[in-house]
Each structure stands twice: as structure tokens, then as C-alpha cells.
Length: 295
Image (cartoon, rainbow, N blue to C red; front, side, top):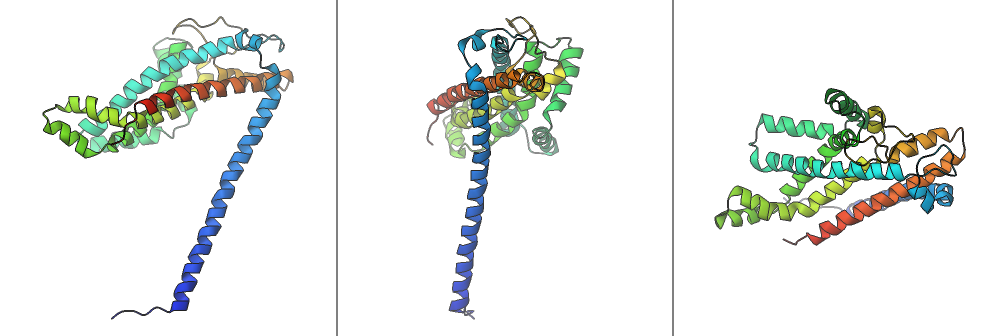
């Protein structure tokens, strides 16, 4: 027996759904505008405070207690050195872990246990990783608050993010590509290296971009490690003491209550940090697009 619908009732339901769709669409649009509005206010405030202090002497000078003579070359070099540690560690360890979990590990309680803990670690506060780095790298391994200790600590911080994103990238590779490779006589490692990894590389690089951006902007782990923001020499290696741009921004923001010009220095440093992030992200996006293929 076919149930008869009242045409008027059906039309009212359709109108109600269309009306609800428009309401929620408008709410989501307002949410987006609110986020962009707040971001625009922050950017305008930072640019207005820091643009007057952004000059070549500021970029190439050393730290100084005199706001008119202060520079950020030491913090800029320290950030670059940390990035040189974070990139290879996170890519090698993160992608290697994702390959093992996704393509080698057998399904079972052990694999589920590892994946669950990796997902949970992605939400752990960054200061906890700072305590871990302080215990393991600074005290147990006796590195001190050097570039290597800071880079390894930040690598631990972003590894869960990269592992999860790399796993999703490997899952997204069409299965027929691997089957065709096996059918032509390739081994499992040859299939992973020549077929699966190239296909997943664009998405893996996207995850690495997000991970690197978070690592560069973190302050709490470096604060726990005891990274100074004093008049220290420029870092020249992995075992040199250093400071980083987020640390310099943090300390200048605190000192702005005593000397107003420090707020302008912090604003100029934020502009430099954002420019560095945009530069690194642009390079990563260029590499990603270069190796991107259509399957």
C-alpha cells in the first residue's frame, strides 16, 4: 500500500528545510567574518606598532637593552638553526612511523594501542613536551639549552601531527596502483618507494607545512628549556646556545610594561616571524605542487 502525502504538507517541509539551510549558512558566514575581522584587527595593530622599527639595522643587529639599537639577527639565526633540526627529524621519523603503521604493522590490539596514543599525543599541551625535553635532552643527555635540544623538543611536539597526516595520505593512495606494481613483479619496498610514496607525497608535505608552522611559533617548550633572550653570541652550530623569534617576542612583550618601545620591537619581530613562515610555507607548497600527480 502506497502512503499518500499531502502536497501542502510536503511543500511546507521543503520550505522549512530551505529556510533552515539559509539560516545556518548565514550563521556560518558570520562566524567566518568574525574570525577574519579579529585576525585583521590583530594584523593591523601589529603592523602599526612594528613597521616603524622594521629596518635593516633591526634585522642585522644584535640584542640590546637600548630599544633604538636592538636587533634580532641572533634570534633569527637561532630560529633557522632550529628549523634545520626539526625538518629532517620530523620527516624521517614521522613518515617512517606512518609507513610502518599503515603498510607493515598487522591489525590488532598493539597497532590500535599505538595509533590511539599517537592521536592523543597530538592534543597534549606544548608545555608538557617542554618538560619532557628538559628531562631527556637537557638533563639526562646533558645537552644543555642548545640548538639540538630545542630542535628535538619541538620535533617531539609536532611528530604526532605529521604521523597522523602521513597515515591519512598513505590511505588515500588508490589500491590499484600498488596491485599493478605487485602484478609486475615489484617487491613491497619497491612498491612503497616508487609508487605509494610519490602518490602520497603532496599530502605528506601539506602535513609537514602545518607541523613546521606550529614548531616555529611555539614559545612554551623553549621557555621550559631555559632558552634565554639575553645578549648572547650568534649560534654557529647545533651545540651553541641560542634564542628564537617567539622567545624574543615573549620577553619584549613582558618588558613593554616597563619600556613602551619594547611593544614596537615585539610588533616588528612578529612581522619578521610571519614573513619567515610565509617564506617556508611557500617553498613547501612549491615543492608539493611540483611533485603532485593526478591518479
